[in-house]
Length: 111
Length: 113
Image (tube, rainbow over all chains, first blue to last red):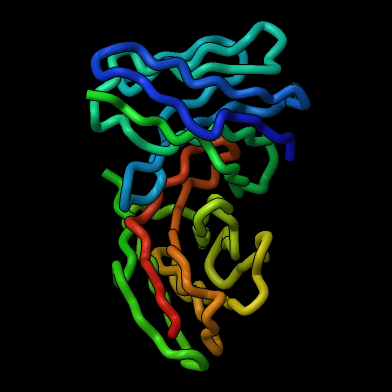
């Protein structure tokens, strides 16, 4: 599986936008970019995914670079409840549905 | 809403005991997964299953086995628990689509003494 690189931790102020980066320079043409997050004392939860075009949903936006070698998860207005570990994951279009989790980015929100 | 439930949130067992961790999902998902999560190591896949009575090894299957007798239930078994199996165990399920999201349970924190 292609690898992703994320910063270990980031800080942001409450009610400000947050941009969480992810590098995936070895991405293949059929890899989807997925983001999950894990709130304290909970299991991971799906946030968003995309292939080539930018994506928006009620939780976040995903901006994908034109060469697809990097992407950015955008939280438009961070709240204290967004403090979590955010995982950027590549998933290939094959039968195998397993996810390989990296170490993610721990996001701290400052009140 | 999809619901994945795990039999216990916290469990304490002794070295050498046989341990069963149960996971149930209510959305008729084909795929089910067991992960463990340790500080500094992230989530690691232990076993997964595509269908009833089918299982595949993940990245760290040693010391574990699994059972999937019914579609909605996936059990993780520690035949003889050891202290290095103290961890947070997370179960997940997904539809049999190639890039669909996985739904996770709340986790079971297992301590082996």
